[in-house]
Image (tube, rainbow, N blue to C red; front, side, top):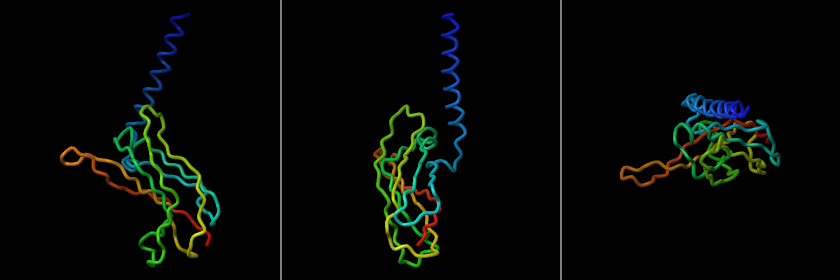
Amino acid sequence: MRFFAISAAFLSLSGIVASATIEKRNCPEAARFGTLSVFPLTASAGDDISVSLSLNCPTMQFGIVPQFLDYTLEVPEASNNGNEQPIVLTRRTYTFVPGTIQPMDDFTVQIPHGPFVAGAPYNIVLNMVYPIDGTDGSSVLVETKLSVPITINA
């Protein structure tokens, strides 16, 4: 009976390790900097939205561990007449805990009562700042962006 319990525990642990390895190998290049999602995708000033950033692929597969996460509400450059400045929703410091099964950044934020333009397209933009090795081995901070379109009722 004891042998069966030990065997079952070993097989369970093996399955968990194998599934983590399979997921690591299945990270598409498009998920290199994470997967950003927002709900709901239509909101008005004063409404709460939920933002979720999965950092599993960046941290586990690509070795990218962000230090700072800035979330903004922006009109895409091609549609911006120069009067719609980015609105900062939140600035967050990220700390990666090694061994975390699903590294995430989840939060709820309120759409501010900003000067929204009726009919303008908007994006929730993540500006992720993370370190890379410099040419002399020192740490250099670089930035990348992810975005999700959202409709703001103006």
